[in-house]
Structure formats: structure tokens, C-alpha cells
Image (cartoon, rainbow, N blue to C red; front, side):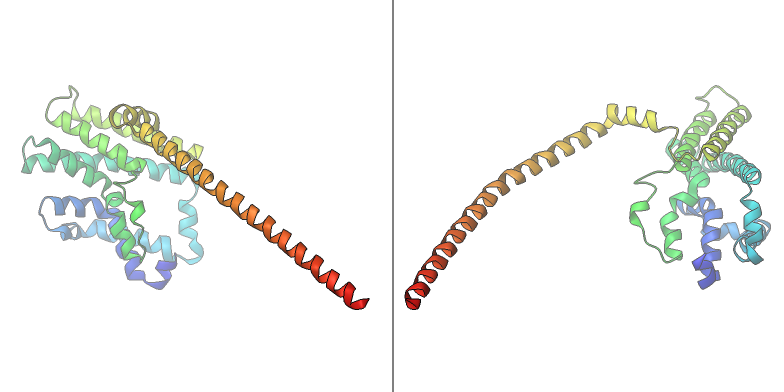
Length: 264
């Protein structure tokens, strides 16, 4: 909201990147004009109208209406269905350019369906924020993960390695997306449904849990070593402090004796 009040142009450009990031990223990957999405003026005007109503409508009434839970659930379901269509269009477009090129079809389908998340770092730069640790490739969010899985599934179906029709796969995939998204919204859950499978595969294929355990063991060893190294220093300091206390007591005793002699 601060960006919207400070720079409406930056806010609008950031919003367009979130809406059409998939088309921009896939165009760059296929050496096509990245500004091709601007040719569809209807979508641009519709997205711009929604952007204006969300950020600049008086008293945030439009935003509050969109925050109404039943309407939010409906919009979330529509967004997931749109994600399915974007993935399919990306896979088909890549297949028309590079026939049966698996990796390209998966990459373009992934970029089409989750481009807004994949270019989130660039979108943050537009808003004057730089968070390299939020890179989706370093820590994938659930939408990016499920889009990658969808791109793989539709690529297998397109190359006839998955014995199911395209429309049936789209229906099953869209149903899974909508049900999962609505469940996560109702339960306020941020944990990915794929977390258990990721843990098992990561342990089997990459030893991720073993690596973290070994790192913890090394950290504990280094801490124990540092404690053992500190103990002699503490003892030496305690011995030196005891010696200094003894010397001070002797000096005070001699001083008292001299004062008593002078008094006599």
C-alpha cells in the first residue's frame, strides 16, 4: 500500500508483472517479444481496472468486498482453473515450436503457469525491495511446485506417455488444485501437501536429513571444543584473581602495622 501511494506507476507495473509474468517469462525463453502480452488490450484494461479498484477505491470498499470469505474462495478457485489453462497452453506452444522436446515443454508450461512467482525478485525490485533469499528456486512455494508437477503431467500426456485424454487430465488436475487451495485457505495452513513426499525423496536421493544431522553434530563438537578451551582460561583467570586478592590483603596488613607504630 505504501508503494501505491508513493508511486502509482511502479505499483501498476508490479501488478502487471504478477498478472502476466508467465507470458513475459515464456516469451523470453522462446526468444519472442516479451511485450507481446500488451497486444491483448482487453486483458490489460481488465487487469488495470481491478488494480485501480483494489488500491484506490474510497475507504478500501472494493478490497473489503473481495476479502469476504465466500468471494475469496470463488476467486481462488477461478485462479487455479486459469493456472491449468496456462500450463496447457504453454506445453502446446512449446510443442509447436520444438516438437516432442520434453525439457522445453516442461519449462515453458512451468513458466506460463507460475511465471509471476518465478520472477518475484524482479517484481520486488520494481517496488524498491531486494530479498535474494526469497528466490523461488531456492525455496519453492506451493503454487510453483504444483505448477511444475502439472507441466510434467501435461507434457507426458502430450507425448502420449500418459494414457489419459487431455480434457480428463485437465479436469482431474483442476479439481485437485481447487480442493487443495480451498482446504488450505479454510484451515489457514501454509504447509505444502507435498512436504511428506519431499522429505522422503530428499532423504533417499540427496541425503538432506543426513546432511543437516551431520551439520548439527559438527556444530555441537565445535561448541564442546570451545567450552573445553574456555575452561582453562577461566581457571587461570580465577587463580590470578585469587593471587591478586592475597597480595592486596598483605599490603593492607603492612600498612596497618606501620600506622599503628607511628601512632605509638
